[in-house]
Image: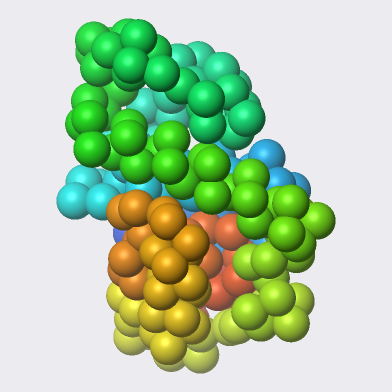
Length: 184
């Protein structure tokens, strides 16, 4: 980490969880389907909550969700849903758990259609990173609008444009590091 360095304003938390995420993961272009899937699931649980809450529960999610195994999650049944809903270490929202199962099934369909989710998601920018060049960070963009509409058309839930924009930043398709940030 770069302790004396300037960071994006959102990454200066006392606990250091946001700082570590910012310094080592956020905005780094990802092409690994397992990582892309994990962040997609976490972003869907973030809807209406802070990212810090989700990051604090990330390891609990990893344990409860079979290491973010997409194929296993796509096949979860009511018994597994009840188990997840009774786990106090998770964000317990049945609608989000149901969406997670549906989103996992769509993720697998996209992999089958494109060969990988990576090929699908990066196709929207032809493999290019979009670098933000000012400190006014938007919450949506024409790109996130387009991808959101496509994911929803395919059957995904909790994938509005704001969630998708945040996801694109998390996986490095959009680089929203602030101008004074050492990662810019």
